[in-house]
Image 1 (cartoon, rainbow, N blue to C red):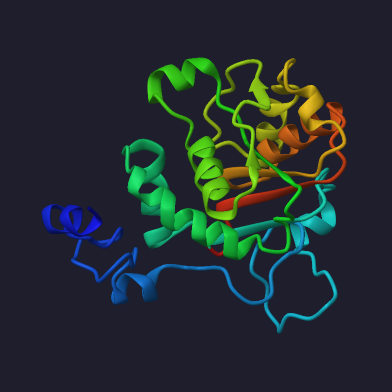
Image 2 (cartoon, rainbow, N blue to C red; image 1 turned 90 degrees about the vertical axis):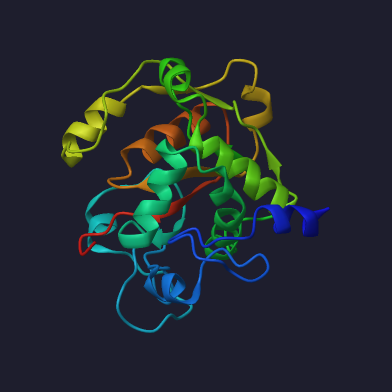
Length: 238
């Protein structure tokens, strides 16, 4: 059946649309131009850092000066170039074909966080935004990651209690003010969160305000350790 599908719809590069072999998500040139995060990175937010990795946690300047309520964090890509285009395609362009390779990239980036008993929880979207967009891209990523890893996922563990303004263009302080108290545990999912390690999933991490609000909601429901995992990370040099 897959061969028949491939004959009708030949596999294409997610970046440029060129034909690719097998299930490769990107052609050679696009793969080389996609900013995957490798090597040393901040143990709390996933920002790439200079130097060789070692056994000691390393923090970026932002995480040294900004208290993070979560334990550890990682991201698969830098939010620029091909990575930015793919994230925006998933977020606004109905490009569901990005989910499967994104799950593999998330699994690789978050391998130290994805313990078998941890619960995958997507950052929630407000119902009005869901009505306009028809889906929550964070929930799509979390479900794809659950299928890839065999981990448990709860897509509605958290709720967005109020519709927050679009965060793009807002500064750090404005982002944190906008998200303060905006996310809460779903009343019927509190027992599922209680006593569990949680890995929060989102498409992009910028200031960390959304992850912070979601982490606080998980802790309010009794979650033990919360880690965060983003498909892409906005960095200062991005």
